[in-house]
Length: 301
Image 1 (cartoon, helix red, strand yellow):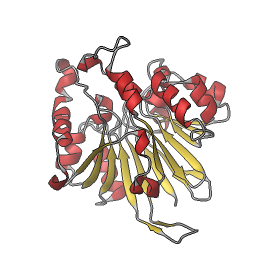
Image 2 (cartoon, rainbow, N blue to C red; image 1 turned 90 degrees about the vertical axis):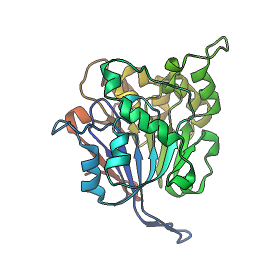
Image 3 (spheres, helix red, strand yellow; image 1 turned 90 degrees about the horizontal axis):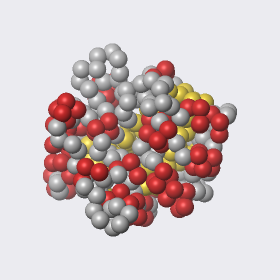
Image 4 (tube, rainbow, N blue to C red; image 1 turned 60 degrees about the vertical axis):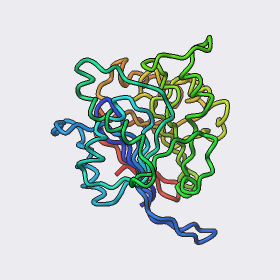
């Protein structure tokens, strides 16, 4: 087994779990510890058999292993729901929490808010924790790509950047955006994970400005991608023609519930560019598990 990527079937949301095994670097014989990384959560205790119960899935597949690194790409409901259950009720230990530097506030009214407010409140409290309270909370920029543990797991941050932060928080005339209107989809964590020669891009809900920044700064890094987690669940709003042309993904994963224009609506556009790509849609396949072997092969488990 190599590095295994679990793209959970959680509906119109995101939850990706990456299992880094114990491994030895051939040239140096250096040992790397096993680690679990979770990127986002969209968990409902009452999902029943329709979608994955994230916490049960984790325990069934990872037992009592701690989550070394939890990354919240951005605090929209479909990437955050269930964080209270994960942190307070699951019994799963989380060591590091990657937060986003932002001034966003959700609209705190309506039925959508009622199902979200406890998780938002928990998230707001997590943001204020200090290291001596048992959790390492950090906010990183793409310019900090030289951190030891990221290098060990070959995780590269493509976004956010300070430039994208400014674009997300200010209008064209330089005035501050209202907190409700902070453009989180143009400054989420976008990650490139390398498994030897394999490249995996986890693109969160990245939209045009974010992709343009990545193209201007990391075009070589994202060339010829082996697995692309389609941006914004495979919607047209996350599709960027030039970026996909450069990535030329061999495998594309959509996290969605249907094939309408508002959900998996960019499938045709992806196919037009990457005609030979294998497309996995959680609405069809359920949870998608891909084993990225160190010899360069990818196996669906």
